[in-house]
Image 1 (cartoon, rainbow, N blue to C red):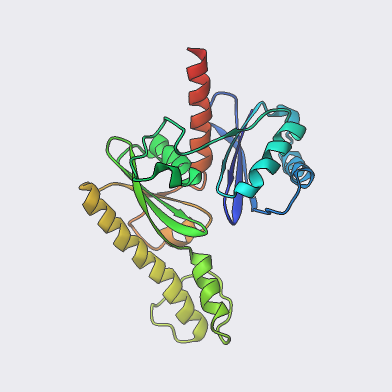
Image 2 (spheres, rainbow, N blue to C red):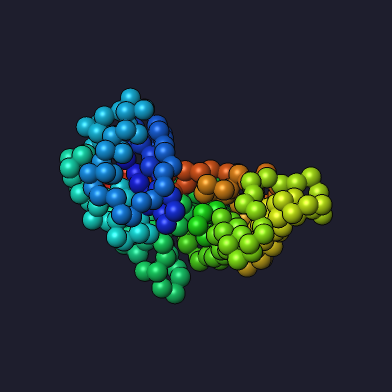
Length: 261
């Protein structure tokens, strides 16, 4: 079994794949904890596996994409101690599944390229992938399947935290869209501005990216808050929360196929 791990600034996603297939058997989404030790992570992963009736010994390989460098050594130790295997760290500039044609490929997040690979695998190219996470990232993939670049905006939760944190009288709110854009109380006004505001951002940036791509590229959304926005716009064709995990799986299987030639 292959274990893929996508370590983000806020959340970490894990996925288990059957051997040499892209069938995602199990997946989990947990809070990223940079201060936890390898033993703490190992015990936590063991608990997750137990809920799915899996054993750490079922894992034969691990692929990691991380944007939290301080956790790299911890994950290295976890994989060796608890899964008895050396993890493969996915790096955007070192993989050859997708050509990255930005000015500085080394600066592109491993998670973004992994999601782009997963998106292209499932939906083809050209494609626009929107990741709703700590940041909202719009990624453009050319008709040739190349990673062209991205547009990065503050994420939904960051925006809410900044607004509420700087305005003492504003309450925390649930991410639900009100029936009308004109809010008649503080909560509905906040919900309108946040939900419909991010919907407007999505539609505007998708239109600009399509114009620059010179094609009506389909759009797939990923990330923990993707469904919140997708249900209020026709700009997003599909929602898939597992794109980065699927991309990491594709990367591993490509390495295996290359080694067998």
